Length: 108
Image: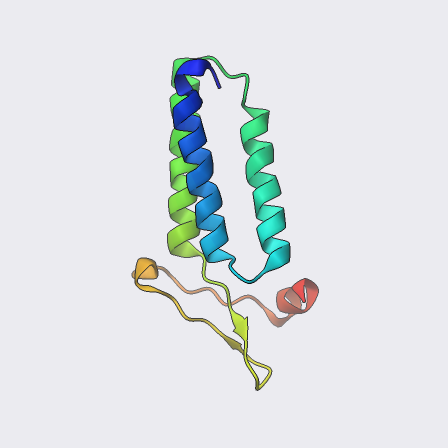
């Protein structure tokens, strides 16, 4: 993004990374993959100079950060072999979607 959006873009980038680190804490694979995807998306748009396009991209980054922080809760495997979901207060009002056993097996 152009020099005018540079500082804002860096703040947005850091906010999205912070959201992924919080949401995926303890899941090394998801942390690595989400950080790589966030970087790829920002790198893809680093040469954008249109002010309206920069603002649109920054808004998308803010929305992504908010979505990751409030809509994603990782299930933790418990000692009985089941998964436990512990939403925090930031997830209030979110709809809970439980992944299928097939999805869980593939990611394990």
